Amino acid sequence: MVKPITQRDSVQLPTTDRKSQWWFIVLRLVVVIGGGYVASSALVAGLARVLPWLGLVRIDGVVLASMLGFVIYLAVLILGFARQRLLRTAVDLLVIAGLGLMLAALTGA
Amino acid sequence: MEQGFRASMGWLHTWAGVVVGAMLFAIFWMGTLAVFDREIDRWMAPMTRIALPDRPRSFDELRATYDTAVALRSPTWTVLQATERQPYIRVAYRDKTGVVNRSFDPATGAVLPEPGTWAGSRFLYPYHYGLHLKIWNIGEWIVGFAGMAMLVLCVSGVVIHRKIFVDFFTLRARQKSQRAVLDLHTVSGVLGLPFNIAITLSGLIIFFAVYFPSGWQAVYPDKQAFNADGGSAYARPKANKPGSLGSLDAMAGEARRLWDGVEPRAILVRHPGDAAGFVTVFQSIEERIVRHAASITFDAATGAVLHRSDALRPVAVAQRFLTGLHRIQFRHWTLRFMYFALGLLGCALIMTGFLFWLEKRRKRHAAEGLHGVRLVHGLVVGATAGIVMATAGFMVINRLLPLGVTLAGYERHELEIWTFHLVWIAAFAHAWMRPRMAWVEQCRAIAALALAAMVLNGLTTGDHPLRSLAHAHLWPVAGVDVALLLLAAAAWAASRWLAASRRRSAAAVAALKEAGSHA
Image (cartoon, rainbow over all chains, first blue to last red; front, side, top):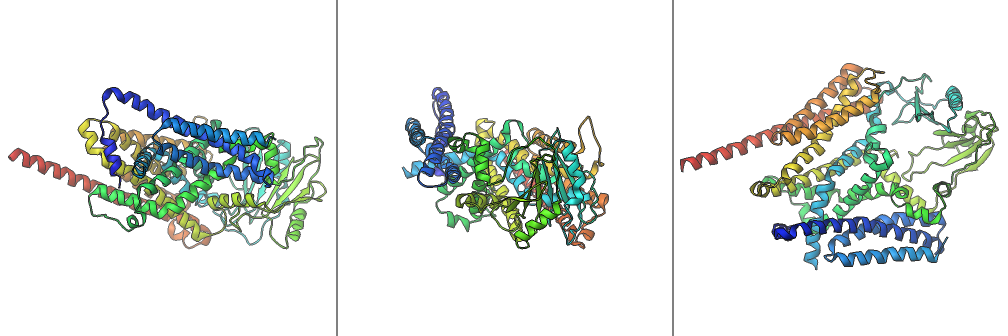
């Protein structure tokens, strides 16, 4: 079941690369967990403003958007850790955050 | 890509599990106990072991505590009638230091003595979402993070086990231990998967306004405006003039009439003693899953109806349904026992995941001189056996401390909580200092403490299982006693099994050495 991981686990990296590898993991954690939360929050804010505009009562829009936030964040976390290229993940997160802010701005309070 | 995706999910599952597993076990263990928090309350506070009378008591009889609340300028005064799971009347108001809780016997109206314990509903239950860390809500945020990690673990766990239904029927218990541990992890994971996802997601959703404040901040100017819009609760500001309070029983009776006979369960007075004070009468929340109590609000002085709660909006129904599903305050004993069993299965899932991580690396780390296994081994013992031991210690000290005792300025309930934390810290220290004997000795300690708690309950209160099983109102006490006995038996059996397998492996090593020296 977990064979591919065992192989990956046992790959010995050259000692000089190890530190950069370690920092890269920390960077990935910060970008995916921290950046992913910020991007999901921005999208929640955008949805909370858009949903009432689409016909939902204000409070319903806020509650629905916030509940969807957990699902959005979960998807962001899974995809963020599945992706090999961290830069592409960062770009995607910026797009999600931008989308959220744009939705919020378009339907301004 | 698929291979790469599964490999990355494997990496994620492994490391998220090791890093967050200790927190998750604490949350699952405390959450599992919280299913029976009010039953544990009755075990730890013997003065509340009361038979529930047939009729609710008059609200007006509690007027003396209302006058106290007025004198203390408390913003609220609350009365909760006795219920099946909490068979005493609870009155709550605030003084300068915080909430004051007072309990009354529903049959006689007599004041019950201070319980001197936070027991299940004030310590174990809040622990599973707040970790007893109140500064800056840091506990809630840690639990939220762990909750998201649990969802990630569920998803990645499903991805790495493609043959999920085949795995479900595979339990090679007699195979070598690494295989058996992995199978146990998989079986408990597959069996508990729907529950684990539902309980974790609903737990997060209860706190949606905490974890995703951006939602309400984008739409409302402040939290009050959001709460006012969401709660459909009646509110009006203080008049800052003294006011009187009419008959609460008359208001409760009017509410009963307007509800076609549904019994009022609770009363909340806002602005006690103020001319703008108002009284809200609530129904019970035990009748349905959706956590919403219909209410009617009266003017405090005249008893005129000011407001009736509206039906919930559809999205609010969804949110309250998930909240109710998680908090299981509705009346359903079968489901309650199932929650408890599934919670324990979740604990087993986390523990076997840890054990598999250790088993898989033990030899390699020993060969390469890495310290990861030793560190994680201590963490695992302390986080799993340690918290169980601390809980048993919490219950033992509860039966030993006399009521009203203080030590170094700490009150009785604080001493109990200190005991819990000190035992837990000691468990971690022991696990790191004596790694070889950690499991065996902590299992023995759990067995001894759990048995001691059960025996002490019988000695100090007289409600030993033979007596408590014979009286229906003592069944919760009997239940906790039986659970303690089962825990003691299980921990004792585990310690014997662990000690035997240690002896076997030591004998095998000795035999190998012997064979080597003869060769």
